[in-house]
Length: 294
Image (cartoon, rainbow, N blue to C red; front, side):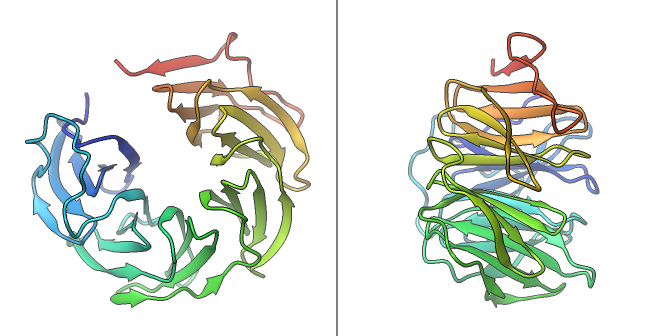
């Protein structure tokens, strides 16, 4: 099965456990797929808040470089934990989508540069907690109550900012980790909203991806130079590192036993996750696998 017909590079993909829908992002479009029987695009959403039934991009066979007037490049999407809302980072804002009605309900605003990444968590009162990272060097927090409409302003601005744009965010418990084009990683306390620890030169290049090993206090980071590193989340001490790819690592995700790294070299590599803090990632020439594009 293949989900095709995108106008250009596919930059983000999410799966909803509740509805079994898949969301893919290319240029200013989000394609909504029902994959239960066959790959069928049932709706197309745009950065400006339009919803079109079916596949609005299927007519384009060549790569489309230009973004339509009034639209912006969508850099990343995220689903809330219950799968009822989708958040799409485009331009300097994040658009909110009510997935029960497939309607745009408003925008999260306040950044002065393009929003490059975001992550969503839930608060005990049913609110969505959205953390955004931007090219303006800042990380912002938004509390979005159910039924929120219109323009939503940030409830917190994390200080001090990074020295360059934010490329990756991930949450572990009460801690937020941020990776930046300044080559550094920061650890924040979400409750106190304070900077707890930082590694100014965690990599020799942009930190483009962050991930976590389930059941193990290990943070993963990937950089534009293709290096994959492991860190102790408590002390920020380096555990190990290896050359994961010869090209930038764009995304990291994990399950209980495996680490997946996606790269500009057109492959996703699969690694054996460490089972403890002193564990190592298996060598790529040993038990790792490549999932290459055909």
